[in-house]
Image 1 (cartoon, one colour):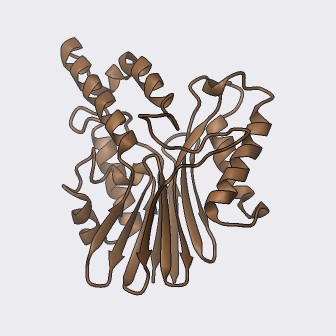
Image 2: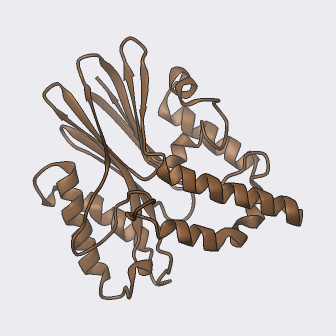
Length: 266
């Protein structure tokens, strides 16, 4: 197997991380707390800890993430007063055992598998996307009503975004990594055979923007049919994002997001 991984920060901090081992790969997309401490970046602390200490525990990816999120909770519990002070994270991972590739997906991270015969399969959990689309539609409506740019409407939907965030790991919500004294990880699970695999991609939503909000590609399949290489795709995302800083042409919740991709060629 050949592995290529790339991450790009969108602002001062990069809240994405990737982890690659002999038979596994992980992509993590951290999210800041609803109530920030203003003394440090909690999301960055969380993703840094998960990456740095991943080999501290034995076992599968899910078990390691569970133990590490419990460690993060103990670190943050000194300064956090309620769940609104804790960061969270979307994630996706793959593990290979024999001829089986197991996939786990949380939040809005995704995995794409391409077979040698050209079959392209997308593995994702759309529940967070549904919530984000409702928030984005409200942003667009407010922008029209107030005759302002779409990005200027973001403060008006803050209450809606807070409400959505509080649905993490709740009924009718979405699954995410959350620091807790007793972490439960309820990922969406998939399994595929490796014998006919050509490539597997793991990526954060900063990368999937190419075929969702930014419309660089009309569909997921088109993107992965035409993908030249990761660096070229990231440059396309950057170019289109900064050509529409007001988010009017391509409505989205933020101008540009952190971008992380792991490509595994078999």
